[in-house]
Image (cartoon, rainbow, N blue to C red; front, side, top):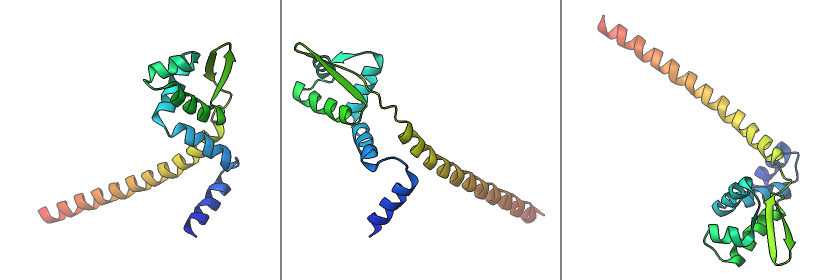
Length: 133
């Protein structure tokens, strides 16, 4: 039941398909896939080049690229025997907006915590002055 409540909260907060979010976050959850995106941000690369760079098999890299492609983060084009990868059309704007909302919540909580800490420090200083008298 608790998981269902969380799902409702997330769906309410996000005006984006949960499946799209799941694909994006699943793609970004893996360090290798984030590395592939970093590499492709510098320029297009073949799957062979990416596999060599990340010291993995072609099959393993194809799977990683496939996950990125399903999320719209990478596109591929096969010319002859070479499959070239490039950054895809997904700009993660909806995902960044979703994260930004949570950042606002946490920023407000930290500001409130700072206020509590400042008040405790003032009270401690005040008590220290009274004890010295």
